[in-house]
Image (cartoon, rainbow, N blue to C red; front, side, top):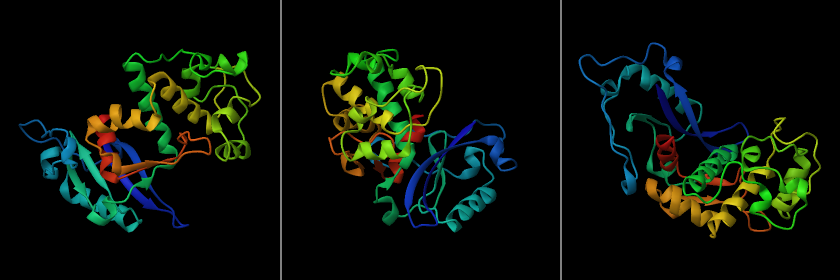
Length: 262
């Protein structure tokens, strides 16, 4: 069983961000119960309605008191918009209108949304996992052109990673910054947690689709989930590419829709 939490939190420095957290039943030892004699309730995707139907916790296989204790714990830790969903239904929440109207920064969870966009482009036949960067971005040397989409997704491009170089890329052109980085490993052989490498994926999707990455995401990913365009923003680098590694801010309810999709 997988449960999805959509949570906004404030850290010790006052930064607020939204997180999409998968929680497995084992983490709720003692709080998940099997309804006697009936399958748990299920709900339809809310679509443009924007909110999941709320169902009594017991009908979804939860112990209601324990679930509320979990929500109270999260609230006490400065989580401002918790949603707990199972089978497409809202089991518990501390969300309010004020918090829900604000797009919260996803930070590195933005990378997962980029991966969803890549997956959608693959489903549409616009590109393939083993396509090479040079098939979609021109004007680069052969070694960098041979890096694959799969290697960018798995953070195994072989390129040198440093925070300084990655951050500098956002003040110029993150894609060009990345595609001029030196290699420190054979592509596909070593994991290294890069940042601007993810922005290369947004450029690839954009070029393969023949439309802006943000337009593609709205039309092919967010729109079908009922997420309006004014419920999210995506920060761009100086060249105009969306910052794939951490530039997305989105309303908490929209995060719940992404969790249900997954």
